[in-house]
Image (cartoon, rainbow, N blue to C red; front, side):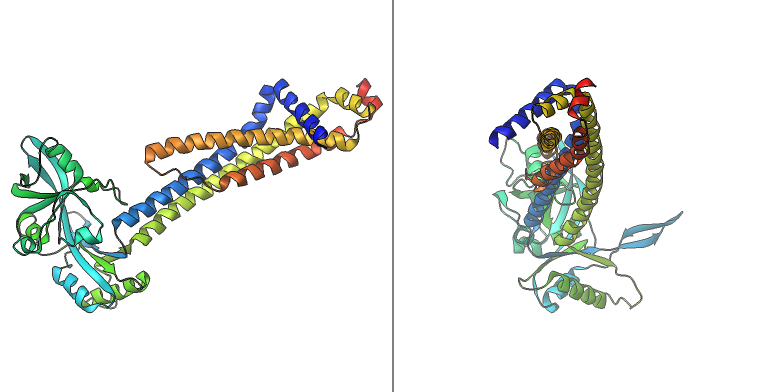
Length: 406
């Protein structure tokens, strides 16, 4: 049995070597189909891992209340702008009145120009309480966060992002130095560890955190906030808490039954779900493209094997004369079509990993191996067998004597 298998494989491989160009064209369809399945499976899993890691770094059990979009009357047309109805008292009322709330952190942010000596940067300045460092899992590389007393007194203290530190203080200690933020001298008391871009693509290393009272009075001169981080206690449903928060905020804002919310609510799971829907759409398109490639590859193998049978009538006749049975002829041609499919599949797997590595390096995704590899290999083998059945049966229809004289 082993000798027969070895014999069939040897003949099949010899045929591949003799007809290299022909067989290469036959297996390209299989190669591209497997490559797309393997590459996208690996890349999509890596994207999901990165999103999950980003959500984990963002904070645990967080619901974000964000000022909603409202219409404002412009000179020429109605325009969108953020509502100004969220207040610091809203955050306090949520903390005091909504069961299941562990912590509440209001925030307000804006883009400003920051300057130190000759260097100038455009940074995102966020006014926050010092509790932000706990609920957002923000660690400091140097210095400290601002204190509760500094918050109450609206002192001009800042914790700067890592890139801000590198641009301003690459060769000196930043702690105790003053930077200008929108012409306001601000003392640096801490430096955040490097964090990279968040789920929305915002560079967290270009942020500057200041006490929220100082931001609202001295930098932005506003009496409203942009949003509120609500941390939910363990054991509470995030969906249920979103509903409870929506009802409560509408109540304290005196929003009528027919009126729209002047705020929006979302969780990290909502963002993950949106990202996964996009990945799922691309996955469907990839499966369609792979199916077409598999069909093209199967047709290519079918055509090449049919041509091979027609060209090898003499070989078939000789083998029949010396004692080969019809099933031996069938097995031989099926093994050849199967090997073409397997070689194309292996080439597709290698090409898929090359594409995966390149995309992961460019996109910064972790390397994750998907379960598409055995599936792609199995589909390729099935297609190889199906594409070789008809040509193999055609090969058995030649009578030995007639085949020798054709």
